[in-house]
Amino acid sequence: MIGIDLVEVARFTLDENFMTRIADEEEVEYVKSAPALSLQRLAALWAVKEAVIKALNLGGSGVSFHDIKLCHEETGKPYVELSGQAKQEMDICYYGKKIEVSLSHTKAHATAIAIIQ
Image (cartoon, rainbow, N blue to C red; front, side, top):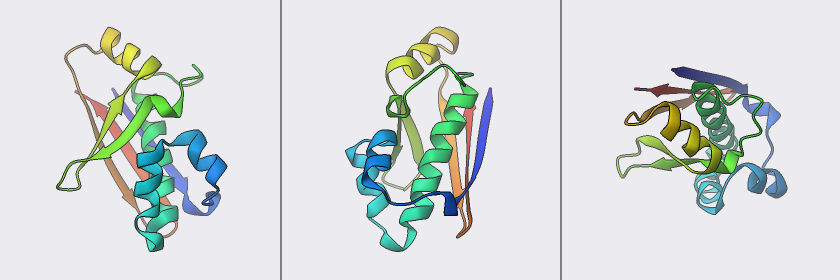
């Protein structure tokens, strides 16, 4: 399964209430850790969560963005950790598989892809 998302960075603001609705404390820290790239990082964070939801076929299910956590290896490679409904769907439908993600952004756009393999 594959999920992809593309968003315009201009849609986003660094509103604290919005960020806490879609991200946990560590994800918010990551967004803020590079002030010149904060909006692009926030847009990419949104995009990766949307891409994972699409890959898991959970669109319209009410899955929480907090069920999908964006993390990074020491090398900077992104990966996701699932909990709640997202983890349950992964365990039931895709047991033994993993989700690979990739993110990219420009000043104007952010994109993410999620592949279950």
